[in-house]
Every structure is written in structure tokens, then in C-alpha cells.
Length: 355
Image (tube, rainbow, N blue to C red):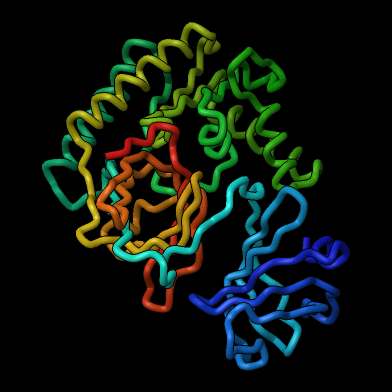
């Protein structure tokens, strides 16, 4: 990607709080990225002053924006970035809020609703595990599954199948473990699994190795059929129900009943076991547009739940005392501030309520 940015003379901004530099990519050699132009956007500062300083880079190329940490390595160069994130180019202009002399008394109050089985509240934890264990037992007994397991996600999941569930919000089903090519409409299969691995950059040889491992697992554990159904709350996939059969093949009717079970499980968990965390102090707005906002979160109790695609409730307070209340989805997680606070980017939902 860096070579593509250089060959196309991509441009972007390097930021450190209120200090920013406009840069134009030129070349990559000997582990360093060189710019043809570095222009200070902050009077009184030049790039040479910031030896080995880490900047937040935002580079635009075509319809995409690339985000990464850029470490100054010379008057017109940075070290090779370790990790790059990309997302579609924003359709609307962002307005700087924090540090803007024309904007004051504008802030956000955030809240997040969660079901957390690891919570230290013993009574609440017991309720969660009781609901989960009851549903698992009923599935094994009434549907005659060999295995039924409910898992709630915490944002650390790396599985390609979990990524599929979160992206598509559809069940993943292996109708027959001896034939992974079987598929049905509106159901994810190993065809989608192969596609997402390929999109992640895995070569076909390694993908085939993964498929062979899955076949071996099914054979070793005598699994004839398997289904993984997402638990969805307010458009967010918060967990999954996984069932496996050693006798009968799972069919579309089974999947429909599992979907109903999943909806009932989510309703039960959030009715009886959910708790809400609300920011006690106003949260600083860094910048915003009509589509979303970037802010600094200082509420440490929230950090565990600030993961990509998490839904949060945002109240925006404006200088004229008007308030916007809306749901939003976390779409970007930026490097922490020097104080250790989290920087989060969210996309607004359509249901914005003006007060």
C-alpha cells in the first residue's frame, strides 16, 4: 500500500493534537517513506522540530482514506508504518471542534448498554449464566443436538466465521460436513468463509490447509452438521449460538428455529441482565460532520466495551442549548492520547432526535 501511495503521489495530513502538516508522498527506500512536500498548517512549527515524534496520519487516495501512526525520521521522511487501516473516503466535510475558537460549550455524554458474563456483580453474573445454560440444555434435549453452546463476544474474537457473522448478520451453516459446497439462500457457508480469507490476503494453498483442518475436526469429533447463529441486539452482533449434530443433517427449518431461539435469548438477556454505563463527565469532541463524530473518551469503565461495530448512545450538547440524541456505531479506534484516554470515531444512525 505504501508503494501505491508513493507511485500516485498521495497527499494527506499528519497530526499531533493542534499541530498538523500537509504531506505529499514521493518514494519509499531503505525502510523510510519520503515526501516531496511537507507544509506546516500550524504557524511557528516545522517538521524538523519533531525528531522521532509519532503523528496520526490520514492519507487520501481515490475513494479511500488510510490511517496509521507516522514516526518522523527526517526533515521530509517517516519510518515504514506497522499497521494501516482503511475506510471509504468521507462524503462530508469534518469540522474541527476541540481547539476551535469559534466553538465553545459543545460536548457529548455517552452511554453503552451491555450484557457481560464476566462482571463482578455476582447476582447479575448468575442470571446471565442461568439463561445461557437453560437455552443450551433445551437445545440439546428438544432438538437432539450433540452440542449447543452460547458465546457472548467481547471484541477480541479473531475467527473468520465470527467476522462473517458480524459483517452479514446471517447464520453460518455446514449442512453436511462431508460436502462443504452445499449452500442455501440467505445462509453463510464455507464459500463465504473462503472469500473472506481471500480478501484478508490468505493464499489459496493456506486456505485449503484451513479447510482440511476443519474436515479433520468434524471427522474426529463425529460431527455430521453444524450451525452458528448470530445473537443480534440493536443491529449489533453481540454473540452466537453454535450447535452441532452427529446424527441428522441440519436443515433450513432447524435454522429458522435457531433464529427464533437467538431472538428470544437476546430479549431475555437484555431484559433481565443488561446494565448501562454512562459517562459521568462531558466528553471532548475532536471533530464532527453530518455523518459522524470523533471524540475523546475519559470514562475508564467504558474502555472494555469500546470495540469496532459496537453500538453506543450519544447525546450531543450544542452552545445554543439544543441537544441531539442518537444511536451510533463505532467505526474507528485511534491511538490513545498521551494521558491514556481513548479516541473513538462513530457513525451516526439515521434516527437522530433533536431536542
